[in-house]
Image (cartoon, rainbow, N blue to C red):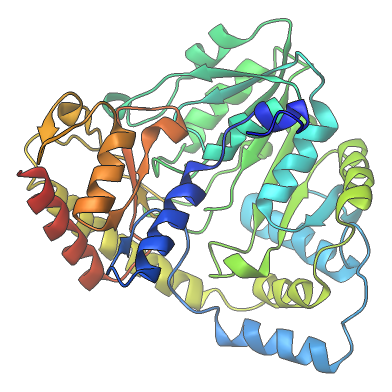
Length: 396
C-alpha cells in the first residue's frame, strides 16, 4: 500500500466478506458458475407494499434533503416499533436514522470511544466490529467461544474481561456469523454484570431480530438497571429484504443520539429520503412477508444442517437465528487437498472457490479462525449444488 496514505488506512483490515464476494464476482464475470455463500444478503425481493411506498414517495416529491437524524414520522414509527416489539421506550429525539446499521454502529463508536478505550467483543463477531473500534483508535478485547459453547459467552467471562479502561460492550443477537441467540435469562445475567459498572455502555446489534427460529426476540435494553446505557441498533435490511435501501437506526440516550447526529451531519447528512419513506412503510406495514421469509430460512437451515451431517470431520451447532451456519473446519488445516496445502481456513475458502466454485468466508474474519461462515440466503437448489461441489472438492 502506498506509504503516502494516512496512517489510519493501515489500522484496519479489508472486509473479508466483501473481499470474497468481489472475487466471486470476478470469476462469474469470466463465465464461471460461482455459487455465492459469502454475502449476508436475502435473495427475496423487497415486499410489494414497501416498493409501492417508495414509488409513491417519488411522486409525492420526497426527493429533497432529509433531516440529518431522519424524518420525524419515521423516528416516531421507530419509537413505536421499539415499544411494540422490544418493550423499549424511546422518544424521537433519541432516534437517529442512518445509511444502514453499519453506519449507525460507526456513528456510535465514533461518538463514544476515545483512543485507548477498550471495547469488549465476544467471539465470533461481525467482521466490521473490531475494525470500527480500531478506526476510532480504541482497543478491541475479545472473549473466545466455540462450537462447544454454542458460540455464546457467559456473564462470568464478560465480567472477567472488564478493566478500568472498558468503555463499551458490543455484540449481536441473533449473531452474525454464528446464528446464536441470547435468551432472556442469559441477557439478564449479562445485564446484572453491567449494572455494577456504570461507566460501560452496551451496544446491542439487533439487525437479525425477526429471523429468530426458537422464541420471541429479547433486547438487553429491557433491563431497567442498565437501560440508560444501552444503544440499540437495528435496520430494515435483513427482515424486509432491503439491503440496498441502506436504512439503519439507533435508539440511545439522548446525549449519544445528539452526538451521532452531529457526526453524521458532517459526514453524510440525512439518509436517502425515498428509502426513508419505504422504511416507514416497512415498520408500520404487515409482517406476513417477513414471517414467510423467516419460515423459508428455517427450512434452508435444516437443509444445510442435514447436508453437513454428510461430512464426518466438520463440527457445527444448530443456529437459532439469522441465516448462517458457522461450522468448525479445523480438521482440514494442515491437510493437502488436490495437491494444495491448506494452512488455514482462509486457504480452504480460496481452494473451495477455485476448485468447487463456491464462495464462503473464513472464520478468521470473525475471530474464530477454525471456522467458515456459510450463508444460506440462497435457494435450496443452489444450496444442494454447493454442498455437492464442496463434498467433491474435500474428498480429493
